[in-house]
Structure formats: structure tokens, C-alpha cells
Picture 1: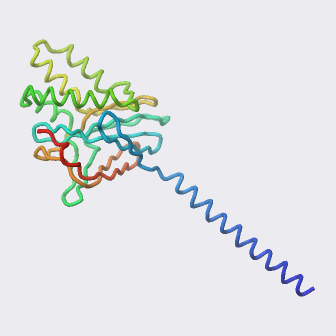
Picture 2: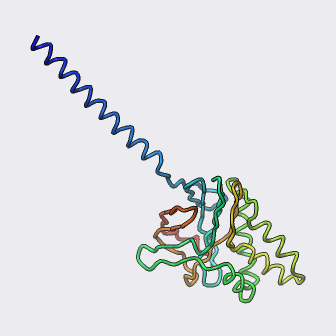
Length: 225
């Protein structure tokens, strides 16, 4: 009887330990499943990273073309949540690995610079690079992004020179409020003396969450003046 009782107690003990072990495993699996992961993919020669939090998806890719004193990222945001969220270029902060953090410039600042100071060659290069990345990426389907801004801008100007500048300025991401199911795209500009951003983190405060993307050093040969 004593041997039988000992065997039964041992069975209960090990059964309890096994149950606790499975419980811990289940909790860890749940936590890992709930922690969004950065996904990387390549499209039209650009290397994108995408992350989803709270139903909102943000993706970005560094543009190889640098204009004036800016480093440029192409970004796209889609709202798959049941509520509306506001997006601003200033919400995109780049935290350098070996230097201070920098917020992207407001759209008005960028647009004024492009309209006043960008040369024709800069404008053509920027438009070509941005459109190649945008139209070549099947993951981006904006409801009110660059294409709609470009059409509105072209409708408001007359001269050929202004049309080119207006098209380029339409690339800049503007502050917008995305209703459920809506999406947008645009470029965010960082003053960086025309150099790549380098290594660090792109941190975006949006949808009540913090999107954190690691950024590696751009390979040599992708920098275009």
C-alpha cells in the first residue's frame, strides 16, 4: 500500500509539473504571437520593412536618390483598425546609432524647398525613383496618397516648370487622418547634408503605439547625388 501510495503521489506530482510546464509554454507562445515582428521584402529595387500594430500597418524603404540636403524614406500607411488615426511626417523619428535623433520635416517645409530650390534634374530624378518604387510595389494601394496629391497639384498650376515642381512636392507625406480602411503614402525628408541616414532605428508614434524598425547602413553604390 505504501508503495502504491508513493507511486500515485509521484504520478500526481509529475503530472502537475507537466501541466505547469505546458502552461508556461502556452503563455510564452501567446506573448510571442502577440508581439509584432518586422517583415522585410524587396520590390522594384527597394528594400522595405513593414510592421503592424493595433491594426495599422506601416512600411518604409530608403530611397537611393538624395535631393538637396535631404535623406528620403518612402513610407506607406494603411489603417485596418476600426477607428480613425492621424498621421504626420513629424511622427517619423530617426534615432541614430551614433548621434542625436532627428524628426522628419513637416510637409510644408519640404514643399517650399522643392518649389523654390530644386533643380530640374533633381525633380526628374526624385519623381522617377519614387514612382518606380510606388507603382512597382503591389503591397501599396493608397486611397489618398501621392497619385491623388499629384493630380490635384497639376490641376492648380499652369507652367511646365511649376508642373514639375508641383509633381515633386506632391511626393512629400502630408498630415492626414486615415479612416478605417483608408491608406496613404508619401516620402519623409530628413536634413542630413544629402547623405544616407546610416545605422539606427526608425521610430514612429502612431495608432497609440510605437513602431520600431532597425535600420542598417545602406550598401555602397546606392547613393545618387
